[in-house]
Structures are given as C-alpha cells and as structure tokens.
Image (cartoon, rainbow, N blue to C red; front, side):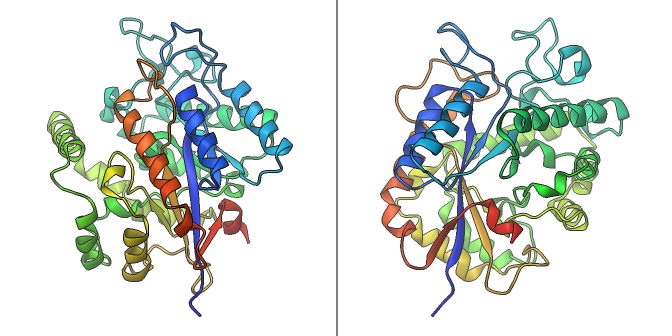
Length: 355
C-alpha cells in the first residue's frame, strides 16, 4: 500500500478585511483548510477606510481563536509577517525606510511591494536591515503576547526571501528555529532548475501561458528589471538554493514543497487531483528536508480565499485585483473536498514538521 501524502492547506492573509476572513472561515467550516496564516498589524477601520469597515487584526484573530475553542476545531494559526501591507507595529519613526513618504497617499503605511527600490533593499546598508528585523521581531512579539506561539511563520509576497542579507539576519533571530517556515522554492517558480527540468516542463501545461494575469506579471517583471539594471547578480545571491541552505544550517524546518498553483488562476483547475498527483509522482524530491524520513514528504498548498461582497478597494498593500480569484479558489477547494478526504491524502498542519 502506497504511503499517504502529507498535505498542509494554509489559508493566507487572515486579519486584514472581512471579505478574506469570511472566505477563510468558510474554508475551515468545509474542512478544506488545515491552518491559517494571519496578519497581526491591520488596524480597526470605519466604513470609509481603505478595505471597508473592519475590527482590526487583533480582534478578528481573537474571534477566530474563540470560534476554534467553542467548536472544538483543530486548525492552528501562524503569523503572516509583512513589511509591505498595512501599518508597521513599531512607531513609524523607527522604520522610516519601510513606510510611504509624506508626499504619498497613506503616509505611515508600509510601501507597496511595487514601490520598493530594490537598490535600497538589496544593498547591505545596516540601517535598512536593522529596521526590517526590528519590525519582524515586533510583529512576532505582539502575536506571542496576545495568542501564544504561532504554529508557523509565512510572509506576505514572500518578502523575507527576496533579499539574502535580510534573510541571513532573520535566521539568526533567537529562538526563530522553533517556527516552521514556508519553503521559499515555490514549485511553479522553478522553470530553470536542472534537477526538475523535465517535470517542470510538463507542469507548465497546468499554467496557461496565455493567461492575462501571467502576461501582466511577465511584463511588470521585465519593466522592473529594465528599470533597475545590474541587479541580476544580487538576485542570484538570494536564490532559493541559498535560502534553503540557510534554513537547513539553522535547523528551521519547512515543507518539502510549497505549492501556489491556484493563485490568480484557480479557474484553470477544476480538479486539484490531476496536477497534485502529477507533482507527487513526477517531481524528484530534490528540495526535501535533509532530515525527513523516506516516503514522508510534506506538501503545502497555500490558498488565498474570499467570500461575500469584496470591498471597493483592497486594504493598503493587499490588491483588490485578485479578489474575484479568491472566491474561485475557495469554491475549487470545496469542490475537491471528496478527493482531499480520500484515503491517500493525509491532511496535516505545520506541526508535523516538528516530529
């Protein structure tokens, strides 16, 4: 009998607006979410606030925890770090390089990821690095003070993973090895990897190259690289292989694969079984954690969910452009509930990585 496939289904972005929170709670109620990754830094807003009326991250996470206890539910909650959405936890005077300037709308909020000057973040300027790490520490401290230890840590737009010298400081934070971290090498982002070349080539049929979203992403990426010439070397230094090595060296556990193949293109996947079965069958375990037992690979599918009526504008740093796709992702997961609960799938959370 073939071993069960360990699958974590993480719902990202809880704690920033009602539309996303409702989608995640619906996913939990349908049994298609095994853990939640929550922002800690969004403030209370009235109906005129960007993203609509909202109770704020702390209050909504508290409600989620109460729901979990009252209904005896077993989904753990992790921390979704960010330096590019919402407001910093620290006073803005302590993180001046991370926030929007006074001349821009939403001064005091984190810069949008598209407004980042890579020269600033890829530089080895100690000042910037210290601000990022200080804010990360503050978000972790705030989460622990209110809710105890997070089940895992992830980061909005994978921002932690983009800059090697910042990630090198992150892995040195005292006690950070206690928290499992998302695998920085997302499967659909590895087209040039030699070890997986054949498998990734075949996987491409599940990612339609004519997708409007994908073309927009490629165009923006090309324009960004043209604007900031001479950065290719720096990005190579921040390659996923480098980061995986740092995680292994610092004993930070992580899933063998993190899968994001529904994000912004959930409509391409009426069935999750076919691409997932292909992946687990064909892709060599070249990023498998070095201490993982044979035949015990752990996969994480991270989802971006939403339900109900989306706000007119997304919260600062959370694009509304992908809100329709969030509801599609939710419906896809629910439609695949039978397969997710089949005999060869073992639905788990990040705790399995600590065993």
